[in-house]
Image (cartoon, rainbow, N blue to C red; front, side):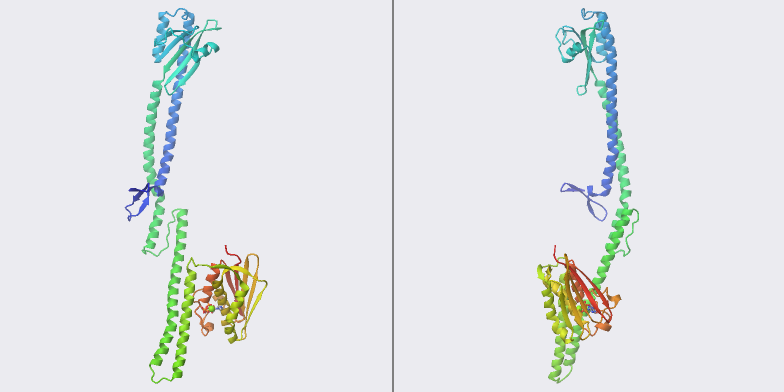
Length: 487
Ligand SMILES: Nc1ncnc2c1ncn2[C@@H]1O[C@H](COP(=O)(O)OP(=O)(O)OP(=O)(O)O)[C@@H](O)[C@H]1O
Ligand SMILES: [Mg+2]
């Protein structure tokens, strides 16, 4: 264990993993339980001690009052205030003073101290607030000074008739004994609190360990999967929460495996597609090399076939590079306000020579001019792929119609052809890389099966959508929806 940036870092013995002390769920639960155990104990101790103190003080006050009332009566009946030399009364005063460990003073109506058990103020004048108040109101007072641990009480010494106040008795008594008792009670309370806390700490740590163990089980299970010890789905059904975590993890795992499988398939497809033109070139080159005196026409024919294969290889590599660039999460998008109608017109113009070869008619219909924020070169590639497919998979003298329309938020492009159509069960797959509809209808038509994958990636990068409807023998329609503004 060591401290790093003011945080405790524990090095666990388990596989040398490190974790910060207070981040550990087990430690947090223990700390919470510790406080749950400690707080009531501290409060209970405090309440008990304070109520003991209050009760003891008020009992002491009652007791002092009773004694002093009796003493005041005796002082009046013996006319002590006129003649403060009665041995009996003086010894009674001293007795009260000693009994309560305090000081008793008697003040006559001239505010002169005629008796002080501490013999400090005898003969002096006392005009303290309490004394004046007792003379004025004829009522006594009580004050408790907790900090200095004493009670100060005054009692008016009233005439026999009770009409006038002849003097005042002041008594201040120490409450040290009560404070000491309270202290020892508090100490005992603290001992109990400490024992309870220790017990809660140990029990809490054990309990927290039990509570947290399913989460550790999940960690172990996930590590087993990632270390390759097992292929099985993680299952820790101890709590609803652990079930939710493992379900989410298993879903992620399945996705990663799917991605891995598709990556492997992609790599093998790429290798295959790249090798095919190379193999053809090798066959062509070998057959020329194997013959003597080959006429120049044959050379030319073979070389033109080889050039075709090189072009094909080039096309595949260009398509693959486009896909790789689009695949990167941070595919750099260059949004600019573009006139979509003229972009489609340019595409159609560029593809017209290919369409003309099959006498296919290309047309563009547009509701109104559309200006949208798009990455012009990427979106042009996407539309061009769709129109090119419409031409490639068409019948001679067929039609490819492009419609452009818009609403407040989106613009819509549909590419409809009168071609061979796509079987319904294959509609879901045509956007996959290298997917080509059954060889029966696309084997004679050249292509790598990457065009629609590129188109879809581009449209998704624009936060758009693409779908297809098709009927075999009648034709297909690709519907594209793209936002007018990029935000
Ligand atoms: N308009 C269409 N009509 C009929 N089939 C289509 C149409 N568009 C696409 N397809 C089918 O979907 C498959 C995938 O199309 P995609 O454009 O991805 O690849 P490709 O045209 O074969 O090759 P590439 O476009 O990479 O040169 C095609 O092989 C074809 O079978
Ligand atoms: Mg295509």
